[in-house]
Image (cartoon, rainbow, N blue to C red; front, side):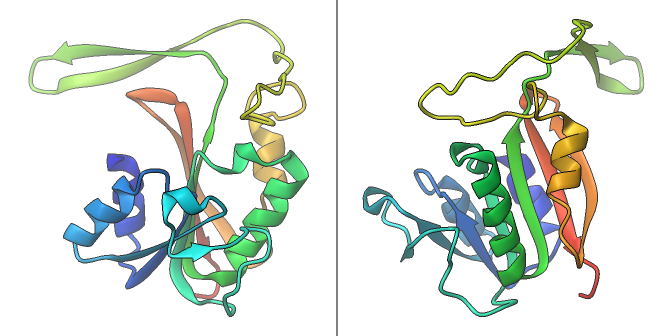
Length: 186
């Protein structure tokens, strides 16, 4: 949650749309920090502000400063997730922040150094080749599974007018990979 808030708040947004809000924790915390977050989802039980599809959102271009989706796009078939990202980019003015599952095996190891404190040193699995992804009823795809290399995902998610500022794995939970996009024209 810290990384979600940190990346969105760095863009100093006045309004944010969160796609797939889950239990609403991001919105609740952002609200205490003075950020107006609205939510969109297909599931009425989540009580989103907008009950609609990410594939055809009812907003004008550049309607929200920041649009975000955390661990949500993998619940769509890959081609649909690309369509959803384009739609998210259409309605965002400043930035788009997403996180996706990264199947690359990484073990977070921390070392304590005098004067430096706790320093994370990731250990990567050296297994060659990518494991085939099998739909588990939830995830249609994951980064670093066969046919979904990180390079492919970065290339496929490239949208004209948007720049990938950076991508990173969360040290504490390396299954979460963030992608931070900003508008070339904001």
